Image 1 (spheres, rainbow, N blue to C red):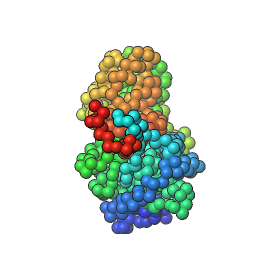
Image 2: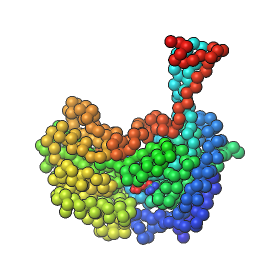
Image 3: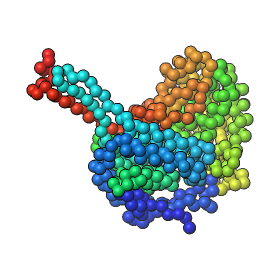
Length: 504
Ligand code: NAD
């Protein structure tokens, strides 16, 4: 019997009102491994969770921020204790290899400890008054109910980037995780809720954290159109993000969008080639290429193009595919059948429409146990030209497009020529090239001699152009999204003083 999971609404774990459910299965062993049954929730369930969060906000906002920080500290400790167990289940749920899912949990732990300490900062600013005997202060206040919608590729890290700062700032949360990773999300919410209980004891506030499982177009839509939701934080595809911006922005909710990417790594003719090879393997084929920061384009200087491509093809052909909880596996499956179909569709576009050269991969991997899951062979296209569809559109799978460039200016022009701008990388041993790249690459993140992936929890994370709407997660920057500024003027002159009038 598969385990049955529930929603958490107003402190109570419960089924959806309709009783509808959906299955969660292992993408590496689809038929044989049913992980759990989850509630397929309705608008009514979502509205109930929003109402609970709204009521909880009036109490939660009054808990001192350092106390809220203590709760986040306990959350981090519990995640740390359960790190291997959570990572193992995450690999089972979405397929990336165990070392990577452990990294995903660690990012959540780092974010918890950062949020815990922020409870003792949340600094405001003071400024002098233009009038005598008057004091000007400004400080951060919480906003209200947050709606959180997340994807499946970083099922622990991404929700923590949102929920932890939101909570420590005094907001309450309704969380709708991706349908493909509901178990990791449930574990996270159970840890948060039990930590609130332990720290607040008899003063426990139900409804601070709520989780509503289900479909984006039902639960997600109900959340973005509910007038009692004050802010929406979304990570996912650009297409859905645009829809959320229209609906939620239409009622002036605060909206943070972290969307797609088409990231590139440049390798110059003066680069350390072995280092650049390690990086592109990790950037393009880690998480089976299903990262928003994945390296999906490799821009090679013409002098080293052929040699580098040969070495890379050799290395890619040696990558070991399999179930990510087994030993020595490099690449797991695609997350679902439809994701694998989408990858295959792009490979066919690359061959037929773009007429790029298929160097390796380009088909389902079906040998032995691989036939049980949604495995796709790591794929390289060469002779890719700027503007081709496989060079422009986000594939979100183990497919790398290799493009030849003439010099640094040419490389940066190719890198910048997409609608996205999340991550980027350049390998060069020439300091002038490196700094020109930092200045001219249009992306939220640039690595010098590093892969396009590997953001650290205390640094700003996000992208430019159609990768987002200008907000940043991570570090100190995310705290601007989860708070309102309040300006306070204290006049102790004992008379009415008129700014801009009495002093000029
Ligand atoms: P997706 O957009 O299909 O789904 C993301 C979430 O939105 C899911 O929870 C889904 O149920 C929900 N959703 C779907 N339709 C909705 C609607 N109409 N209203 C409200 N919610 C709705 O994305 P995905 O397939 O889960 O994830 C892959 C995408 O996420 C890629 O494009 C990737 O680049 C992007 N991503 C971006 C970042 C980043 O930080 N920039 C990080 C990870 C993933």
